[in-house]
Length: 196
Ligand SMILES: Nc1nc2c(ncn2[C@@H]2O[C@H](COP(=O)(O)OP(=O)(O)OP(=O)(O)O)[C@@H](O)[C@H]2O)c(=O)[nH]1
Ligand SMILES: [Mg+2]
Image 1 (cartoon, protein in one colour):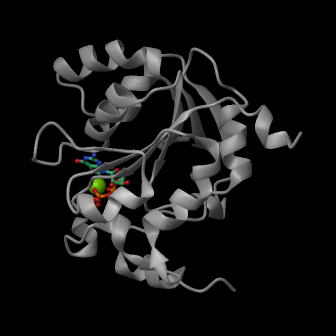
Image 2 (tube, rainbow, N blue to C red; image 1 turned 90 degrees about the vertical axis):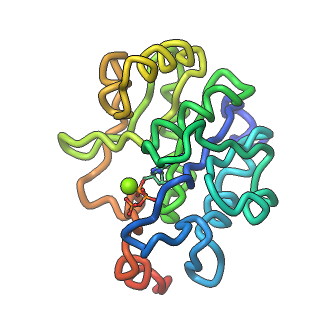
Image 3 (spheres, rainbow, N blue to C red; image 1 turned 90 degrees about the horizontal axis):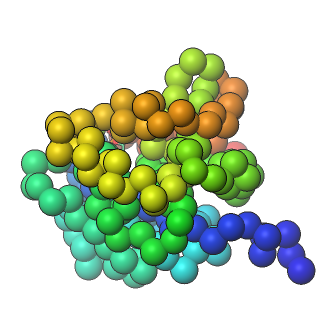
């Protein structure tokens, strides 16, 4: 039996609901990278891991639909940040764990995901680089949904502040781990455009 079958079944949430201001307001997940939309790369990476692939998007739903089992949108229309997407994803997820990844990190690999899944339990599992958490690269127990809802209703909008109170488990990566490159600007998108 291939080793991948031993992985716990999880939901997957790909965050693609941002404003994309640094990209001139364009919908980042649909931007071309190495010949395909960013979301297509994250889809290909995570598709084998789950029968519950959720995309958080706030625009262009028809274009995202082929890459997901479910689409979720933020409740509010004013881009309150990634925690809004996580909240919508948590409400929709069908499994006990939900892997969260941002749409603009196409260099994430299977090994990184497996290191998150290996710590799966009752606490959030989050990538950390040195002293810095990477809150949007994480594995969340969906049983934390009510806790998140309470935090949200009390005004919390920071993923890191929210899970910081829940004794997160760190998965440590080097500060220069290229797999965590975030393509936030046209320059970084172009700078990583070549595979060699
Ligand atoms: N659902 C949802 N996701 C968001 C929101 N804001 C950011 N994200 C997602 O969170 C991740 C990290 O956000 P950023 O890299 O800052 O992306 P962004 O907000 O679209 O880009 P900027 O406007 O340039 O900051 C990306 O995957 C975004 O799609 C939001 O208001 N709602
Ligand atoms: Mg942003």
